[in-house]
Image: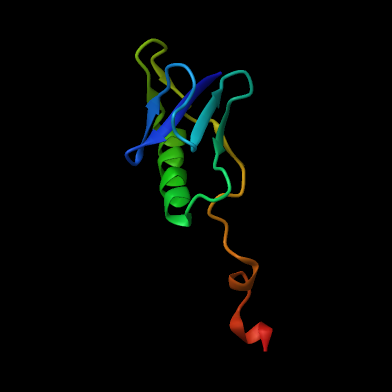
Length: 96
């Protein structure tokens, strides 16, 4: 399993343990991309990481040793970082 870390608004190859909180795990055995976003992450960062992960899902990620990985894989989310608060998930008209 290859792990990519999210730094400077894009994913980078990780050598050793990731230094970033947001990671993308590439599971070649199950053809899955697993986006891990910890709680406490802003919604803006989460959405930017999600857009980058969807880009990797469509075109793949060029690695130095394995070539292009992740193209056409299923994207799965782990964690609840950047989720909307419950009060914002409903229309104000439904509340009153």
